[in-house]
Length: 263
Image 1 (cartoon, rainbow, N blue to C red):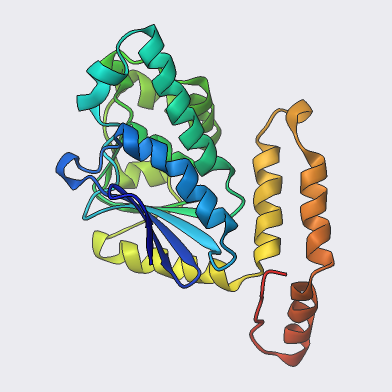
Image 2: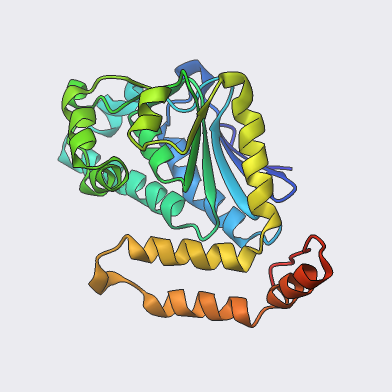
């Protein structure tokens, strides 16, 4: 079953919700209508109890080659236009980052600029070894937002974040794995199978436990005074009070695979 829009497709397959960036004529570059479609699609998957993990991917053989530069003159030139565009993308990134279900970025081909920013919102990044990564803001004269830079520094450290931003050069999948940008990097022919294996592993686990861990880690990345510890503690308590907790114990004692229901 497909939902979403023509250029941002939402597809449900079992316990997996697929977010597919579908703009192949521009290597899946993200247009304004695609940015606008991200929050409602993520909300739909978040509210669907059948969806236990969300995978971000590009249509065809590339991930996302950045924001759609062909729209910059109309959408990003001038203070007012730039402010409106920044608010639009900030809402999209918040929807991707804060969804309480685990997310995987399946990366092939180009993962550039806004595409890399999208990949950074994912909990797990699995890539083709020959994929290409870059943030070319310094070649476009763009100021890069603090939230995105902080996320990059938190992941790869300040030294590599500086190299990525200052040089604007392309990194290979092998380099990206070495500096901590990726969880796994494999031959292109193996990427989708590995992503599906990871998604299946996550979908088989107790959803409330995974949700509690995700919420705790989201809050843990915030400044101490901004953390919602009530939300963290409530999510943990919900696990202990759940039928899934009882099912997990029974399955362990009976030496069988648990069947978690998310309640």
